[in-house]
Length: 399
Image 1 (cartoon, rainbow, N blue to C red):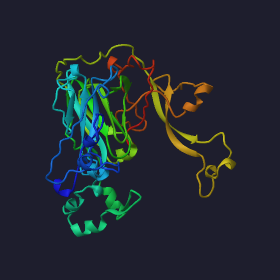
Image 2 (cartoon, helix red, strand yellow):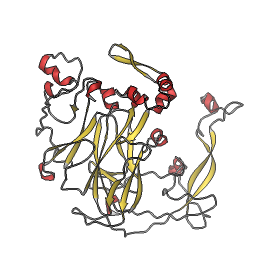
Image 3 (spheres, one colour):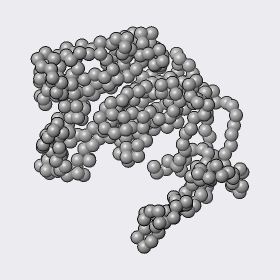
Image 4 (cartoon, rainbow, N blue to C red):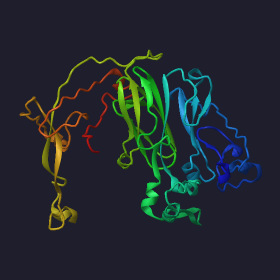
């Protein structure tokens, strides 16, 4: 690694002076204040970071707050090369230490959860990695791959790096939509036992927005119930959940571009319950509600209140479809024979695309299937949530 140039470590969430910043930019400093910006190959440097009361978790925070760290000599290329990690700042009563640095694996043991996991969701652009030239040598025909490669840093003007586009398809093929450095579900499964209380430290540093979720589970983030953990560039959060459904569950990014790129992993919940030191899963009893939902085809008008003169794109003609398209929608009925639809009032007319329930098996045309959904105490609104929480449902045969 050191042979590829000068590197640094830049932290988030802690206090430091210029000698502990680890970020190279024109800041008007020199001498010892710049030594941290770029460590030479074979060299070493002592970074000093302070965790003061101002940086510690507040009374309203979780027991531990995650932060990231990464290379910042050339941040885009440093992160693309793999220089990234996560650290925790914890309240003293929740751990044996105040700050813990984790290179993608949690070695400490928190007292308030049973399991800890790191989910680093990002897009690693290997075209910009300092190791790209070496990686190209793994190609079956290195000369061919080299000719197709994106060339980095051809022109630097006004502090902006301009890239030679190279072969666009080849460049895109080297963009890895990963979780902890793994793509296409190759991340070793996150393993839990029935009843485990777990925290997932979800972070992203470099590119895009990531909407992470675990099918079959809800989460608590900042003490509020949700099913999605949204992280943007340089953002870090803790998502708490309880393993209460033994099975093999999908953990993935809901950004549809990233669904196509298979940014996913799996959570394995074993059927053998292990007594939790914290609490068990919620009980599955209470009121039973039944809904009868059909999928029907309709002609949907995207602009029923507008005349074709309002927009050329709404005009139906020899080269345009217009505003009406055939769609499949969920329709709610009152009976098992699907003969009496639930009528909506004028205030609900905007809801023609919606009805009331969600995913599961692949149901063939003309067939029926019974889905069972459980709302346990661990899925209910938290103390600071509103009285009701809104979720979506959809078909998930082909997103």
